[in-house]
Amino acid sequence: MRLTNNFSLSEFDSKDGAEMPEDVKCNIIELANNLQIIRNECECPIHINSAYRSKTHNQLIGGVKNSQHVKGTAADLVSRNHTPFELYNIIESLIERNKISEGGLGLYKSFVHYDIRGIKARW
Image (cartoon, rainbow, N blue to C red):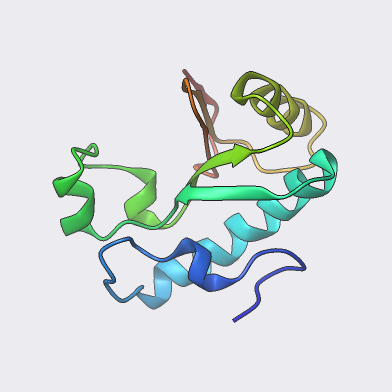
């Protein structure tokens, strides 16, 4: 099922194959719309390493109990054309210009975490 021009629902599935609850699917649709804006700004594909995680999968990988991933409001992202630092700055700029939702933004060595929690969180 296509959610935006460049993202399909399957890209957001839990890696353990667990079925996505309907309330999570609603959050995923909102997240995908924000990711499409990021992708348009980057002018290149964005790969989703991890988005929705079932509670079981989240526990298995050592995710925090209250993870935004379990709610379907987060994605860990990689761009072939941008370093994680560059992608982080692009996302921060889009948030500052009110082009995408405020939320969590985390910079890691090999990816960027972005979520739509509605309040500013940075790491």
